[in-house]
Amino acid sequence: MISYGTYNQNSSESCINFHASKRRYAWLEQEGNMWHFLTSLFADPAKSARKWSNKHRALEELTREGWTVLYPYPELGSKQRTVRHNTCGYGLMWIEQ
Image (cartoon, rainbow, N blue to C red; front, side):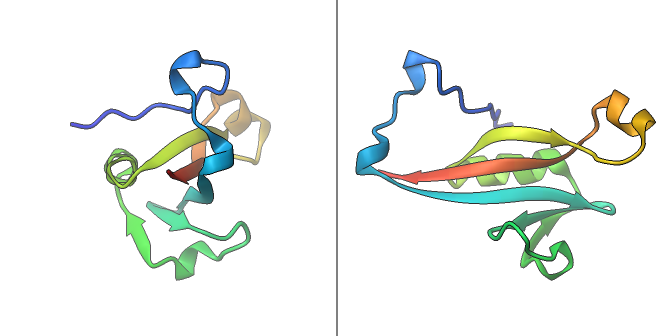
C-alpha cells in the first residue's frame, strides 16, 4: 500500500525549486459514488476521462504518477454535513523538475 501526504510549504524537508520547475494543478472530486480526476477547475465530473470508485485507490495511483495532495476540501451543504467535515475533493499539484 502506498501512503500519501499533503504538501507542507513550511517544512524544510519539502524544499522544491519552483523557479526551475513546471507545475500543473488538478482536482480529485467526489460526484455520487465515484471520484473524478479533473484538470480544469470548472470541468464537469460526469465527463472526466479517469474515475475511481475507491478514494484511497485513486489517491495511491495519482501519487505513484507524481501528484501531490495540496489540500482536502470539505463537502459543502447543510450545517450537519459541514460539521462532520466530509472530504469531497482534493487539490493536487504535479511538479516537473
